[in-house]
Length: 476
Image (cartoon, rainbow, N blue to C red):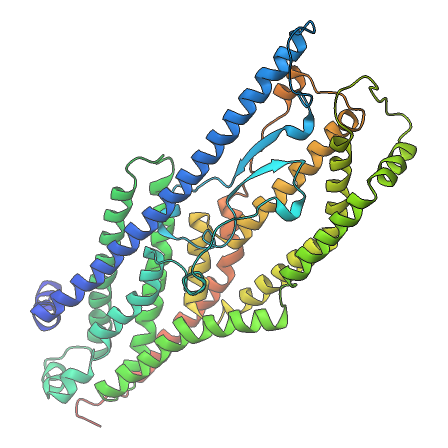
C-alpha cells in the first residue's frame, strides 16, 4: 500500500462521514468564536488606552497654555493660583498591546493596563478601577482562541485517534492487514500522524484565518512572525497529545478503555492540575489582604493630614537649602499634599513589597507545575507571546511607580518652594515609556518545561514502539 492509497483509505475510513464534518464544523466555529472574542477584548483595550491618552492630552494642553500665559503675563491677566504647579501635571501611561494580543487575553482582564500618573495620588490609588465586573466571569476568564486550542484540540485528537488499532482488531481487519506483509509499527504511526496532521492542519488554517481577519485596523508589524511562534507551540501541544494517545492505544485494549483513559488524562491535565496548582499556590503564598492594605494606607493618610504642619516643618528643617517663594500664590495645601502622598507611599511600601513577594512565589510554584501539565506550560507561553502575562503587567505597574517616584524627586524642590515649573522644563520631561523585556527572554523562562515534556514524549514513543511488538491481531 503506497502513501497515496493509504491516505485515501484513511480518509474514507475516518473523515468522509457527515458526523465528522459536523465535529470539525463545531471545532472550527469554536476557534473562530474565540478569535472574535479576543478581537473584541483587544479592541476594547485599545479604545480605553486611546481615550485615556486623549483625555490626559486635552487636560495637559490646557494646563500648558495657562503656564505659557503666566510666563508672558504682565500682571493684567487673572489666572488660577495653581497655574504651573507640578502637582497638577498628569502623565498618561499604558502597557503597549502586542501585535498578537487578540489571541490570548491572559491577565489583561484582571490587571491594569493603563493609568494616570500624578503626584496627587499615592501608589494605592495609582491604578484604581472604578468599575464592577461579574466575579464568576473574572474567575473563569474571558474566552479566546488560545483557550479553545488548549481545551478542545486534545478532545478532537482523542475522538479521531483513540481507536487507531482497536477498531480494526475488533472488526477482524487487523489480521488481514498484517497478512499483507505490512509492518504494524509503521502502519500504526502513519495512522497517528495522518489523523493528527488533519486535526492540527484544520487548527492552523482556522487560526491563520483569524489572524488575517483580526489584523484589520491594527498595526501588523511583527504580527505574522509572532503568529508563527504561537503556532509552533500549538503544533507541539498537538504532537504531545498525539504521542499520549499513541501510548494508550498501543496497549491493545478495547476502544472503550482507550477513550475513557484518555478522557481521564484530558480532565486531569487540562482541568484538575491547573486548578490544583492555582489553589495550592494561593494557599501556600496567600496574597496579603487588600482590605488591610487599603485600611492601613488610609489610616496613614489621615494621620499625616492631621499632622500636616509638623510634617512640613520637619521637612523644611531637614532641607534648609530649599528656597521658598514667599510671594507665591500657591496655597499651603499644595506642598502639604505632596508630603502626604510621599509619606503614604513610604508607609505602604512594605505592603506593596509583600504583594510582589507573594506574587513572585506563586509564579515560582506555578513554574513547577508546568512540568506536570502541557496545558499550563503552553498556556503560559501563549500569554508571553501575546504580551498578556501577569509578569508583564506587574512589570508595567512597577515601572509606573518608579516613574512617579523619579518625577517626584525631580520637582520636589519646586513644590516645596511654592514655585511653578517652566514650560520649557515641562516639555523636556520625558513621557512614560514601558521598557519591554525582549520576547526571547520572556519565552526562555518557559522553554525548560517544554524541553522536559519533549523528553517525556520521546520516552512515551519508545514505550509505544515496545508495546506495538506485543499487539495481537485478535481481540484480547
